[in-house]
Image (cartoon, rainbow, N blue to C red):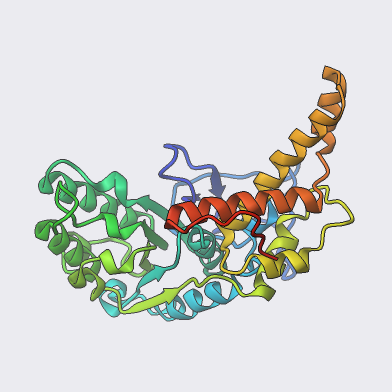
Length: 341
């Protein structure tokens, strides 16, 4: 029995449960077996660490569970290319360089890339928010770090995903470097700790991937522990079109919506920006329909179930809001009547 660790940090219970068949009694066939709830008896004899099957999630949007997510497949390919040798050659995996620093802007889809890569490589994904590892004292932070790595070793084969690595290794003021935490994390990454040498499942891979959108704020000593770096760059126009096509698939789009034109107008947008754009367009569409006519409660429920049609005007309004918010964030001067096409 293998436990799926995709959301282990968010809940004490694992949402996915895998059963590894070790012995089959009865007539043997080479093509495969079909398990019937009426004629098949399943005996649970214990738990083992093992690779997990690769299959899309049974719920949620297909984009988030795809092995080849639109607009991000190139990054998934790069991560798999780096990790694959360490999956098959597991002696001293940590010391051999199975460590990757995954960089990219906020909202660029780094978590989605790692989900797809782990699914392709049949590995568990153990994500940890580095913000939750920061404590009031260096000793507390180090204790928490060691606990996370110890649990990750018990969950092999897996990828320990350290999200927002730049938050680790800072002092309480956030301006200086906490050398104790950085030094201990480097030892854990390099696999030089005593507990790692005594790990029972050393024949199974434990790979470490850290993500950050501010690589310049990661201490240099810590950066040197990651022998590989993969960047998730903002998508090209063609990739944005692929993303928009997939993300708008479940939306009731009006016939006047031109996704190719929208992809050209959203240069520099990442996955998170495109999601914000579609969410804003849906909100504008909802407001427009509600203000256009008086709806009874029953009619409103029916519209909510069917979905509010999103028009090109709704997308224009949402895009203008995002561009204005971005201009305010960077302090750009406002120009009345300016429109970006």
